[in-house]
Length: 118
Image (tube, rainbow, N blue to C red; front, top):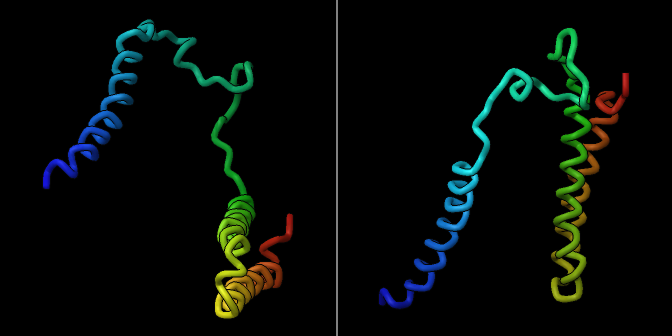
């Protein structure tokens, strides 16, 4: 019984030891000379001046979330399209419901002016 899981155990041990070994070697060989210039914030090759904490508008995050939602929709749409002939009418109806829910969400965001760039 244990022989069946021996390959999984060996594979897991190798999968854990390779990155740990690589990180350990990199930690041992790294240069250890911290300084004021090395610890400074690097921003496009220029010295920073003024306040570096900038508050972003929440609207940027809303755009990002809407993009992620429709990106995930695309991820779900591809396997469905590939297996469309095998799935039948039920899968077609399910996909229309899925797309309809996303369209309702998009219309809601549009109606509440969440997509307005002000």
